[in-house]
Amino acid sequence: MDIDKARPSPSRSALIWKFAKILLALVLIGFILSRTNLQELLSLREQLFFNWLWLYILLYLALTAFKAYQYGKILDEPIPYWRVVSIVVLQNGLSNIVANSAGIASYLVMFRGEEGVKVGRAAIVFIITKIGDLLAVWLAMLITGIMIWPQIEGLHEVVVALLVLIGIPLFGFLLAVFLRQRFVDFVRHIAERVHLTHLGWVKSGFQIMDELVVEDRSSIFHMTLRGLGLSAVYFLLTLAWSYSQLRFFSIVLPLAPFIFITGILQLVSIIPITILGGLGVVETSSLYLYPMFGVDPVNFAAALIGMRVLFYLINLLVLLYLPLYGILENRKRKD
Image (cartoon, rainbow, N blue to C red; front, side, top):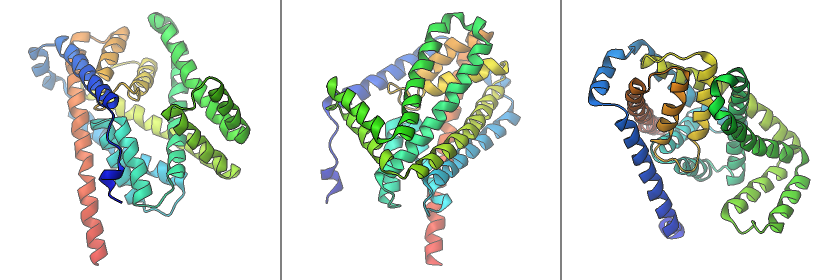
């Protein structure tokens, strides 16, 4: 079969939506640029602590390596670890430089097309991983939000809404794991009653849930528990990496507000309106949140531009792993 002919072309509405996301990113990053000036951007280099840069790079590499370990342990398939690393590198590169949807698609395609893993099983591993990541963020926001509640008076409604909106899918997933087919049938019945079953994302959701209930109960429990534990470690690494980025740009913040803001930014980065790794959306959210805890907004706007450039550079650096891996694999085959 000709792959190009089999692949559906993007609809007009999808192209319009993609253009709207790009336009939003450009408008928001333009807003960030308007909050700083050339002098602040040039003086930024005098505020850099390069000892923290090396830690930033090492921690990003550690995050990539650990995500591959996380996928491998949950998937539990005889796939070489360094091959899984290459899948994660491509997924992260596409998610952070293009769009989240491109990263997810590459993850499913590479596991299915090159490693022979069933799409359903690969999707379950991805969902379990993301559920674990969301649970870690949810708990961090809940605990630190309580600790700094008087300082975030203007965010009370937003924080409560986020905790509820995140808590619902988390609770629903746990119900699907424990109740299995009964829960899926109940949700499908509700979806049919409100006429949602024709929607594409609803159909995809039911396909994943059907794959979930087909899996052996003990296997799903084991995968879920392992995924939750590994996600907790991954979130701690993410906190350390984010903190090293702030310190590289001479930004200091107390621990509780830092964890709280990092959790919110983790959620912002996966909102469907983002593209190019959350360009503009993450920066605008940061410019609103950090000054609430004493960070100078003018200096911070310049630092945000530097952080975005650094973020793209580290992703491009990690992508060099792919040709290196290909060269080593070719030599191994020849030997």
